[in-house]
Length: 363
Image (cartoon, rainbow, N blue to C red):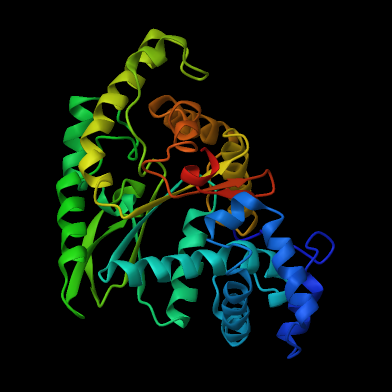
C-alpha cells in the first residue's frame, strides 16, 4: 500500500485533520463532522467499534495518536511525502487498525497473533511495516513473520521437487515446514515477560534465487506478531468445485494439481488455528495482482536491477492461481464470519475502498 495516498480533493474531512496537525484541534462542530463522516460508512464504523455513543471519545484518541505521529512520519517505510499526503490512510485504516490491535492485545493479556492474508501486490508487507512502526510509537513491540520464513530448507525442497516436479516454484502448500511454524507460534504465545523467541528467517537470494533458511532472529518481548502470507488462513474447499474451475485451471492436469493443493492445504489448519485474528486484503479483481507484479518488475528494471520478463510473470502468477485460485479460496473468506475479523477491499489503485468485519456485515 505504499502508493495509497489521498488528497483533500477526495477526502472530505482532510481540512479538519490538517488544521489539527498544525496545532488547531477540532471545534465541537468539527468533531461532529468527523463523527458524521465516520458513521456514514456503517460497516467500517462497526469494524472499528465506532458508535454514536462512543464515537467522539474514540475519535479523540485517534486524533491524539495522529498528532503524536507527526514527528515519526518520516521514518515510515513509504515513498517520501508530507504526512498530509497520507491522511486518508492514517485516518481510515492505519490508526484505527493499530488501535484495534492494541486493544486486542490488552484484552488478551498475552502476545497477540494477527494473521494477514494478501496476494501479490495487495500491500501486506507495507501494511505490516507501517503497523509495526505505529504500534512501536504506541509502546507495543510488533514483529513481522512471513509464511515465506517457514519454507523448507533448500535441500528438502530439492527432494520435494524430485518427488513432485509440479512444485518447481516455492510457495504453494507443501513447500513450508508446518512443524517449524507451530513451534514458533507456540514459543511466541508462551513467552513470559521479555523472554526472547527465535523467529525463523529465509533468504530468497541464496542458491541462485532458490533461497534457503538462515539463522533465526531472536526477538525479546513480543507484544503482537503480524503473521502474513499469500494464502495465510485459506481453507480447503469441496473438491467438486474444481470440475468447473476458472481460468487458468483448464486441463485435467491443472484440475488434479488444484485438487492436490487443496488437499495439502488441510495440513495447514493447525497453523491457522493458532491465529487470534485474521484480516484479508482483497483486490477488486484478483487479476490485478498480475499487473501489479509487472509494474514492480518494470520499476526494478528502470533502476538498473534485474527483473522478470512479462511472459515469465504471466507464467509465475498463473502457476499460483492454478495452485489456489483466488476466486475459489479468497472470495469465500470475505464472508467467513467464524475465522475472519476484518476484510479490506482494494481497488485498482491499491486504495482501500471497503473495510468491514464479516461477522458484523453479514447478519
